[in-house]
Length: 123
Image 1 (tube, one colour):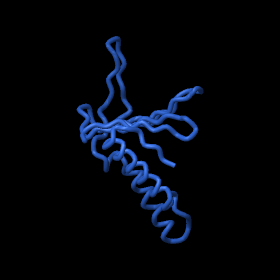
Image 2: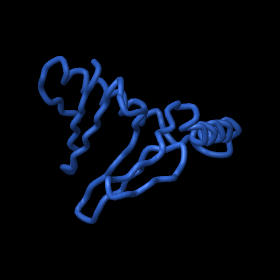
Image 3: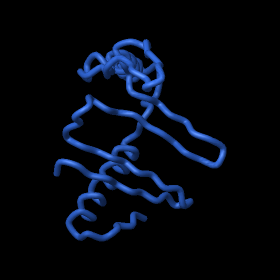
Image 4: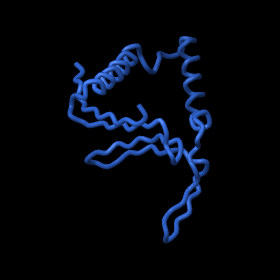
C-alpha cells in the first residue's frame, strides 16, 4: 500500500486522522496537529534553518531536514539515555508491554479494515 488514511474514533468520541504515504514529493514530512474548541496545537517539520522570507508573493523557507537520523538525533539520544536508566534501575520504562500490545491491536484492526472495507471496533 502506497498511501493510506486511517480514521480513529476514541471511546469519548474524539476523531483522529493519520495520513501516511511511502513517498512525499516535497520532502520528509512528519507533523502533528491537534484541533479543538479551544484552539490548535501543532508540532511542525524541522527545517535546516529557521530563516523564512516573506514578500508580497508569499513566504519561502528552508527545506525539511530530509534524513531521519539528522532529524531525530536528539530524540534517539534521549531514548538511549532512558534505556540506560531503566537497565540501571534508576527509572521505570516510559512505555509498557500493554502499550505495545495496544499499538499492535490498532495495527491489526487497521489491516482488518483494509481487507474488509469496513470499520473495526476494538473493545
